[in-house]
Length: 498
Ligand code: BG6
Image 1 (cartoon, rainbow, N blue to C red):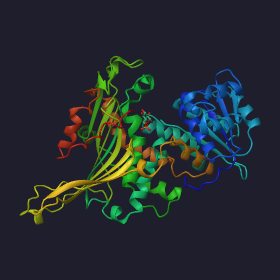
Image 2: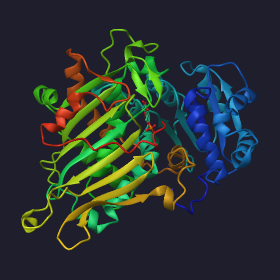
Image 3: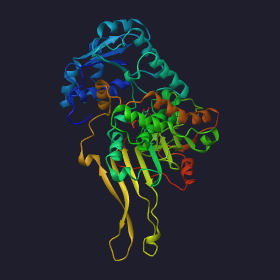
Image 4: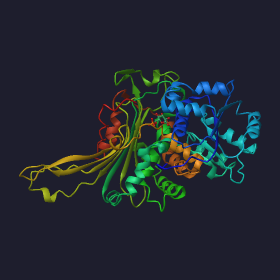
């Protein structure tokens, strides 16, 4: 989404699960921002579908809550909501039954995007019904597309089955699998930072890079999401999707162009090159943890197993750390360490590239004691930015060195704080640009790489405990210590509120 973008083509957005949390919390705020910024025109329509009784007014009232509009009637967002609400309609119906699709067929003409903001178990059924009722048939100059939220599958077999089922009904070009991390500016910037900068891309390989760390630490606990989370766990929830998107951006080869196909080909290739471990390798290269009671920024957090809708004998992990290898020429021998967890000391999503040390020889007879390796830190959130640790000469008569950071913060230069991240995804859905969406092969490659860990854990064992408000289990430190490394310290507290 560039600065001078024009409004997306006239589209009706049909939201399945219109009365749900995702619609209110994320989709509507994004649509309001899009209206405000002129990214959709006055010909844009929203049609919500839900099982709940009601009419257009009911949905408009439900959406007009504070978090959707920033306060109805209040400022620019309020004005945008006032304009948009007249174009929000509601169709009450059960999306597992045929009736509602017949009604949709009568109502819908022209460009339509169907957004599946529903629990994952309904994805296949809805796509089948849309297909059976001819709702996905594209006429000349009128598109039909589907946006599918995560989780896409529960493991490799179910992801494959879902892809087969969906692609039996519609073409890949009609499917927009959402990973909301790809809507983040800082994630999109990884490619620009690499491919628009000679001094970065030229050293971006195993000759110069020692190892890569990808962290998505969350301060939030599982809270009210126990039912979903206990059946899912940290690995499924974060790794084959969000963390692998970051890994793909870091590890992909330069695409021949910035076209969706070119980019998705390269991302697909590198995800397929993530080593699929044998059971023994999987055991040696993973750590899982579950938080116990503790304090996160003055909030008392109970044991994970005391969370509502979580089994008291649950073995679900709320933390995972992995060491992965990417079997390409560029990355031969470079470990990628990934970690993510809930109820950690602070919120911090970052990628840390640690370069190899310089030969110390020339500094031997100087006052320099050690030269820490260069590091590039891509701060995804919060406090978005990019910084580089380098060594300089400490001022003075002798040759002594000092490590310093070259630091760029987005907030100092740009205004990126007012969007949800869904704006660019929804805009691209309407504009027909699949760059920021996951293709079937990449999703399956992601699941293939995590399947050995799922198999291992299904066989037994229990996660390591870590107290809420800490950095995760001690075994995760040992995973890196084994290779002579330590985890990068999380961003300083202060910008930590989740
Ligand atoms: C979601 C996961 O996909 O991503 C959540 O289901 C997680 O468990 C969230 O908290 C993290 O996203 P963000 O944008 O807050 O980093």
